[in-house]
Image 1 (cartoon, helix red, strand yellow):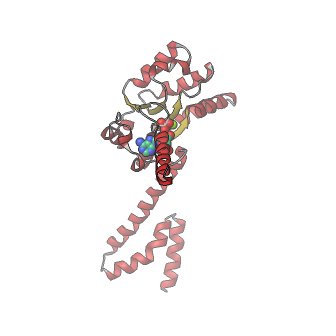
Image 2: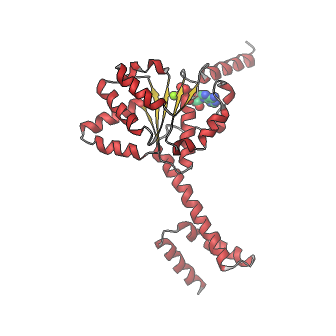
Image 3: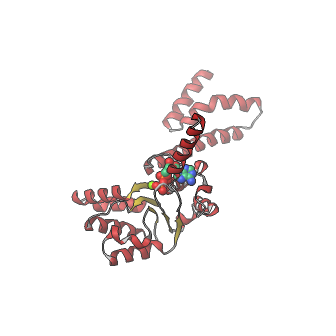
Length: 258
Ligand code: ADP
Ligand code: MG
């Protein structure tokens, strides 16, 4: 009798797509009867498990969709290595209100200073808050835009990008683009203005962006939109990678007795 009930219940929960409830109802029922819980308390606990599992799955799906090149979080970021960056201010951004306010962020500085690390950590935080995020290098984004244009699918790609709460455009400035490529990137940036957030990392100071965008007018128009309501972090200093490798070399020398 009980077996039959369990079988039917399991089958119903499967049909209703409630897999966590299906997996947990027996164990929870035993606990509930041992603790003299009411039917409502039991049902509440059971549904809570399903809700929690669903939101964890949704976060994982958003993180996968964001396309981060690797996972990087604030717990592994040493803020003392970049004294020019205010830790409270970065952690404030990690709370995500800036994205709800459709403002922007720029992380500027020389290579190896943690720009990509912080950009990913901010993106992860946004995914956990239920926001739609995409991480892409500037070069890859321009390539995607150009290819979409060739296939007459530019509007579709632009619409996809517009739906994102946060677009992270990494490594602007390492490569310069063709005039057409720069114009497409400009279009993406300009369309987000005051409607969606953009996070850009660059090894170039704003004064050097003309090299990437070719043409003073387009650069000025872009910077105007990007930097109006923008959180700017200058991450200057020695390369973290370089410092770490020097440290390990020194450590090795000391242990070799050289
Ligand atoms: P950038 O994008 O500025 O060139 P990255 O974010 O790629 O630099 O950093 C290079 C490497 O050094 C990465 O592995 C990153 O995790 C690490 N790194 C950089 N800065 C820090 C830091 N302050 N604390 C911990 N790791 C760091
Ligand atoms: Mg980088």
